[in-house]
Structures are given as C-alpha cells and as structure tokens.
Length: 383
Image (tube, rainbow, N blue to C red; front, side):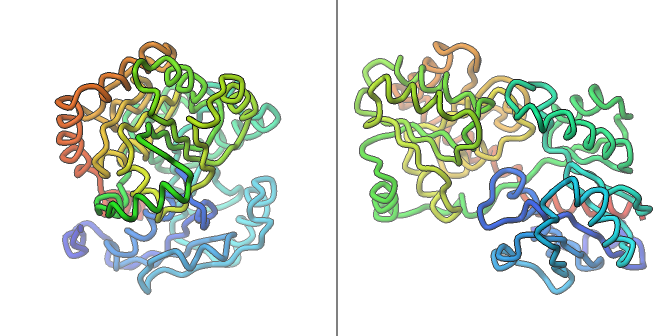
C-alpha cells in the first residue's frame, strides 16, 4: 500500500474538498462501477490530507464501501440517474449551494460550474462502433461527452490506447490527457477451496471443465464469434462454455444460436454474478477468453491472471496493453483464430503453466493504491 506520508511533499498545505461523482457505485458493480468504487476507497486511504464528498444515487450501495473519516456521502435524489436532469440542473444547483474545490466527473461534466474539473473517460465505444450502441442514445451522449471533454482541466484514462483515442477524436492536447492504469481487487489473489468451487458449480449449474467469459452481454463483447469458436473446438466435447454477465442489448440472436445449435446443455449463461462468487468461478476455469471488439481497459483480463487462470484475449484496442506478455492473443474477427488460441491452452500443459506463471507476476503491476496516489497528484497539480 502507498504510504500517505510519501505524498506530503507534493500536496498543498491547505486541504481541499473534492467532489466525486459516485453515480456508478451500486450494489451490482461492473466496469465503471468497479473503478468508481475502488478508486474512492483507495483515495480515502492514501490521501488523508484532503476531504471528499461522494455523490451517490444508490443509497443501498453505501454499505458496500470501506471509507475513512475524510469521506462524506452525499445522498442525491433518484432523478440524479438521468443525465438530462443531472448534468444541466441537479449537479449545478448542488455545487452552487455546496461548492467544492475540485470536481471529479465520470464521462459527463455538469454545466455552469466554476470549479476545476477532472474527468475520467473509460472508453467511448459508441463513437467507434455505433452499430453496437442503442441508436437513440448515441447522438446526445456523444454531444454531452464532447462538451465535458472541452470543459475538463484534466482527463484521466486507463491506457495509452485510450489516450491516443481521446486525443485523436476530441482534438485535445495530449498534455491534458493523463494515463493512470487501474488496479485489481485483492480478493482475486486469494485462493478458494475446492469445496467452495464445488458449491459455486452447483449454484450455477456448471458440470465438468469450462471455458469462462466475463462481461455484460451485448454485441461489442463479440460472444457470437466466441460461440462459433467453441463449436469449432476439436476433441473438447466435455468442456462447457460459461458466460458471466448481465444481458444488456441484442441478446436474442446469441441465445437463439445457442438453442439452434442444441447447446443448451453445454453453454451456461449465469447472468450477473456477485463479487464474492467471482474469484471461485475464475479459479475453476480451464481458460479465460476475452474476445471483445473494443475495450478502454478490460478488468477481467487482470482478474483472471490474479486468479491463476491462463488468458486468451483479443489482440485489438487496449487488451494487449493490459494483458502484456501474459496472454495469448487472437484476431477477434476470425473465429478460427479464437478457436486456435483456446485449443492451444487446453491442449498444452507447458503453455498453460507458462501463462499462469507470467500472469501472476504481470498482474502485480496494477494496484488501486497506486491508481489513487497518481490521481491525488492530479488534484494537487490543479490546486
């Protein structure tokens, strides 16, 4: 863990009050929520000089947070979930009545505010792959995010890939876009018992060895091609495919293909899985496959490596940057490439052992304490 005292030389003498957009903090966290939750928890540990005010709409989620005394939870009305009310009305009025020194936003910056702004952008796949996003939301969301980028004093991204994307698309100076890699939840480093993994198999109706894929189910995750690759795998008819994630959009085609292929007994779709079950599901897998077409970061790659599972991942966007030398990469547009990578891991004990060993070292590069320390430095630069 980063020592808070190591940061004192860089911080201003007067403590700041930092407003923190916590709308993604919910009881059922996924990518954006993982970042929002783990970062504020780590900031409360490494930055004991400043004060934080976290604006949350999901009040039930506050019980899941582990925070120090320098963090205040500000309960917002449920209407806060709507960008059309939050950005132009609710947040500006709140920040006018109760000013902060710096506001840390996620994707959208409130209008009419006169404070310094730090903006986190995880990705903007709806711009790059508009066919993979709900059409009526795409144009207004793009406008809001463009406006937010223009008003932000600093923009934080998790990878160099996202820095290049942000500079190229939004035409902002590279110096305004800072790369701060995300962390990994320490729970994934803890080994679950065979009994615990057996209980999870029973809970989610998983029998036999399985290939694991994790992420909300929608076209960008490329699960259709993963399914075709699974069908094409030779000599692995006892292996299951387990899909972990909430069905979000255009899921009918995927599930229809599973049914038409007669694979209901070999493909398991668990839906959302709570955080406490994820380490055991990772650790029980033969291989983790991440075929996504576009990712700004890709938490599951690191979660699998921390869990001691070999990773086959897409060779595009940020995945090679996150997975480094520890993953086996494939062309996500070619079914045969996906199938070949999975098959190599399943059939080569040497390759499997090497990936697990390299992955266990590589994943130690990522920690939420380091993410928080570098984020706090951005706040202090703006002070």
